[in-house]
Length: 108
Image 1: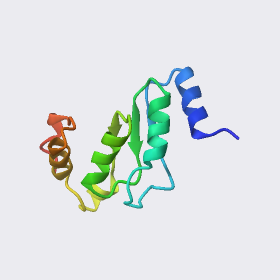
Image 2: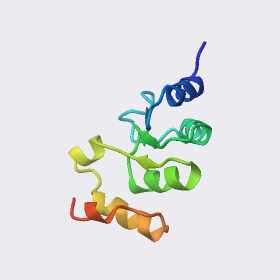
Image 3: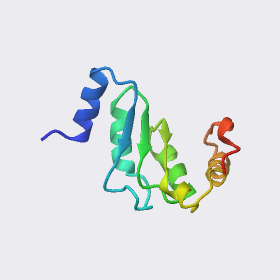
Image 4: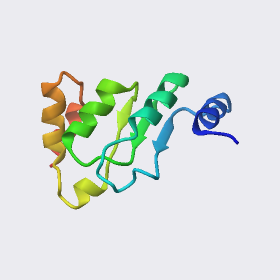
């Protein structure tokens, strides 16, 4: 068997510039990112890793940046369903001293 870690290492060796790490088991659950998987991959490669799948609240974004080496994190469903505003997540991250991109500040 080949696991996610081995795939990530091979992907980097083949020249990938970044990895969009999507954990299908977490996708749409709103239970948070798979922090163990994100940390395993982001600590094992020297290219940016974008955490995807599972975000349900602003704390999940804080957690992924405080507990892993992820370079970025994304969500879609929570914004489309208007469950959480981007500005709320950014404010929470700023309170926790996590840098955010200011050019996205106008998105609600």
